[in-house]
Image 1 (cartoon, helix red, strand yellow):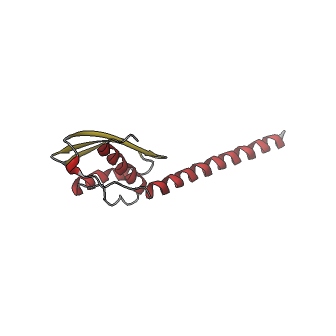
Image 2: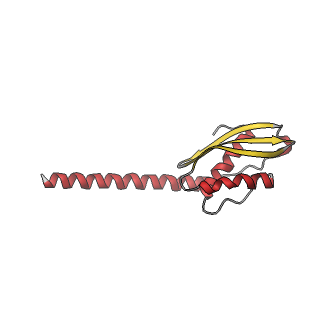
Image 3: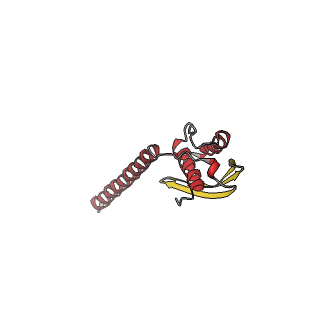
Length: 131
C-alpha cells in the first residue's frame, strides 16, 4: 500500500515538473518571437482623427488598448486590459509613445515583455489589425 502511494506521488511530481518545464519553454519561445518581432514605423500623417482599438497577446501577457489620434498625433492611449504577470510597470510605455509620437521607444526596464506587447497592441490599433 505504501509503495503504491509513493509511486503515485512520484508520478504526480514528475507530471508537475513536466508541466512547469513546458510552460517555461512556451514563455521563452514567445519572448524570443516578440523580442525579434518587427515594430512598424507608423506614419501618423496617414491616420485620421478618431479612437482606434487594438490588442495583442503572447502567453503569458496580453494587452488591449484604445488609441486616440487628433490632428495626426497620438493624444491618448488607454490600456483597457493588461494581463501582465509581473510587468505592470510597463504601462508607462504609453507615455513614451505619446511623447515621441512613435512606436520606436525604449521598453520599460524590468517589464520588457509587457512593454513589447503593449507596443504591438498600439500598432495593431493604428493599422486596424486584429490581434
